[in-house]
Amino acid sequence: MSVGDRPGNAPEDRREERRAALREALLAAAERTIAAQGLAALRARDLAREAGCAVGAIYTVFPDLDALALAVNLRTLNLFDAALGPAERPDGAIDGPAAAADELVRLGLAYLAFAGAHPLRWDALFRHRPPPGQRAPDWYVAEQARLFSRIERPLAALRPDLPEPECRLLARSLFSATHGIVALGLDEQRMALPVATLRVQLEILVRAMATGLTAQVSGDCRSGT
Image (tube, rainbow, N blue to C red):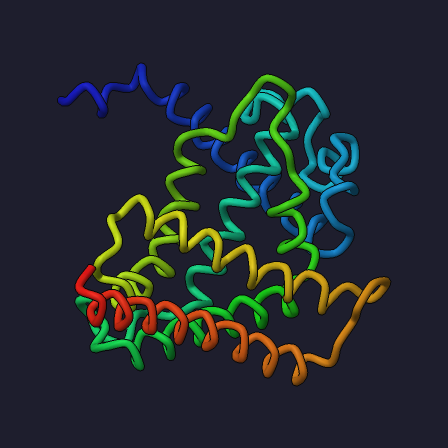
């Protein structure tokens, strides 16, 4: 009989199963709350009531509500990654500047579509802040970096001369510009625009940046730098 089969482990196994079930119930409740009411509506008493547990039980599976919100945001990032769809080629390679520009436009429009379809979950990604003195966990930062790599690949095809650190920085700059258009365009109190208009403006911006990056490479080649 293996260690895992010993009867003495059965109570521990059942405890872990209950913890896993409680964690999933709380995550599902938090997801529903954020999707329907936003991050500010996340309250321990309401979550406990929906998950069918005591308030104190929340903290047996999550250290605090910030950790629970971060776990929901991770699921949102995974949902967004799935919404982006696979790369056109299985190996992720991009054939030339035109294909790279098309891929950047596709990613930008997918970002707009996701923000429009999941506005409060999308908002929670940017509204959540770690407690004072703390940073986002490494696993969360790694997931963000993985998503940024979706932008870095077409940028590297546009500017193969750029070192990786500069390409990563450029990807974040392009994302910031895209996010600004999407955030302001969807903000009903500031500058709400029809989605069709946003799509056109977003494509103009992304293609202009792609054209400028390609022109920089051509100019460098002509000048011999």
